[in-house]
Length: 150
Image (cartoon, rainbow, N blue to C red; front, side, top):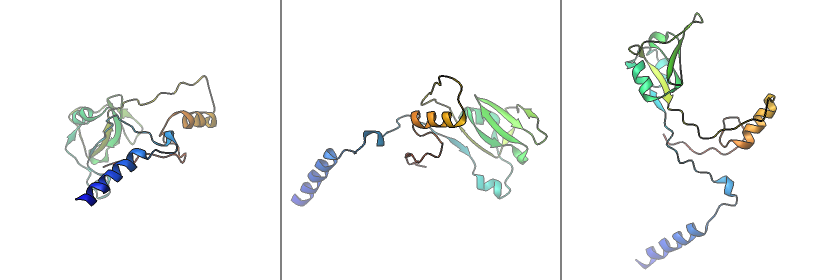
């Protein structure tokens, strides 16, 4: 028993004394961002083109996302809670809530950060401004990204 308690006390002291060398290297995101995915992309590659999820159910699970429609009849874009169907002929329509989809990934958009620009800029200036001011943005910057638990 004495050996176990000594190990536990030593571990607690070590963990309390340990601090990262750079405070900026440890950033913990505390919000509850979640995504909703109906089916898997592998199902589409295996020619499972029909699903049973309605557009109404898509809207209940997110206001931003992508997907497709039964029979692969167009691309789905969900933006600000509105579902759009982009058809092969270039037309865009809003599907009925009762229409079905075989695949979608949506989330409720929740702004974590905001960057206000002083004025117009070119791509390189914009990229640099984003990389320097928004943690975890998706430019390939070599920055650390938190692991994702699935």
